[in-house]
Length: 251
Ligand code: PEP
Image (cartoon, rainbow, N blue to C red):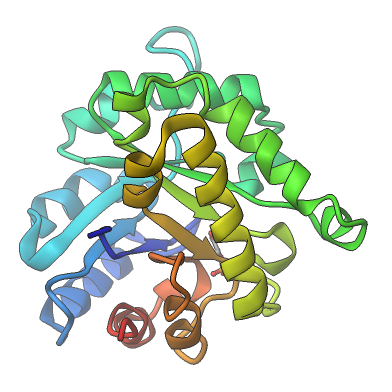
């Protein structure tokens, strides 16, 4: 059976004290212990939050990014090795905000995936089409290309370690959520592409999360889709009640 996972991407929100407060509220909440709950705070909070969470009741921590080089003269950057040295187990790679605002391309993202895996970090690899791609019916082609360029160089063993997040760019932070039909359609397409490349066993066991204005009201419908294994949640992860309602939305 595939893992069910909800990731809370805090982006550039929460001071240190606010972050610790949110973690306390999450740990104290009534949540489904069988769901993997991954908190992705800003880098500067990672060490303290990882120390506090200690995999309690299915909680884990993720970094929001890592650099594509293993070390060196890259002022302000953080390496996969540094992240893992704080006890963090996961890293988000290829978020559309970084692809768009920081110009991260497929070559760079493939390097980040390789380094994350080499350091035993689980990549949460984000992909998704723009509104223009969707309106011109190029969304499947775009996602197929992102899969191929970012991930399909991996061996079966490495591919089977990662998590995929389908995040249509037009739905991130906009309040426009993909319909269940659109989400299921794309998740099924991604799974079929994985099947073609890596076979049934790996395609059936890869967790594919939905991201894009997922919230406490729509999570139940989205998570009821057969190929949706959970969510990557931005705005709604900043309030403990909303995040926990989403975690508890699997039927
Ligand atoms: C995200 O940050 O990946 C995201 C999906 O944001 P939001 O839930 O706010 O749309």
